[in-house]
Structure formats: C-alpha cells, structure tokens
Image (cartoon, rainbow, N blue to C red):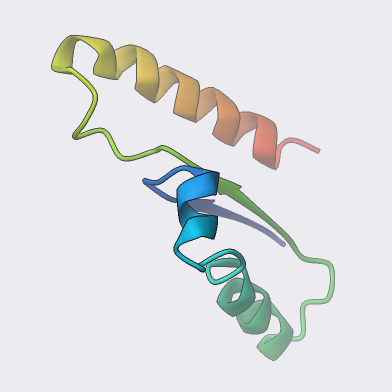
Length: 74
C-alpha cells in the first residue's frame, strides 16, 4: 500500500513544531490494522496554495502533481 500525504508546511516547519512522523504513524497503523504489511508513506510538503500568487498557482499545482506522480510510481 502506498500512502501519499499532503502537508501545507515545509518539512523543516513540521519538524520545528515537533510533528515529524505524526502524519506517518496513523497511516501505518491503519494499514497494520487491515493486515497490510507492505506499506510506504510519502509526504509532500508545501502543498497549501494560499500564499502563492494566483498567477503562479497553476505552475505550483503542476509541480505538486509531478511530485505526487513520482512518489507513487514504483
């Protein structure tokens, strides 16, 4: 099973808040509860768009989608 989590903050910001691994643990626990052992979790950071100027959002969305595609492609 592949989990793809989206987070608005940066990896550094999430770590500074003490939340590193917080998103990953519940996803792994759900898979374990369902009896799924082969699990990978990938988090994409900086996916929140409110701070991105409207004219730059389409390009940012393309970047996020490309990163998501890369994350789930074996």
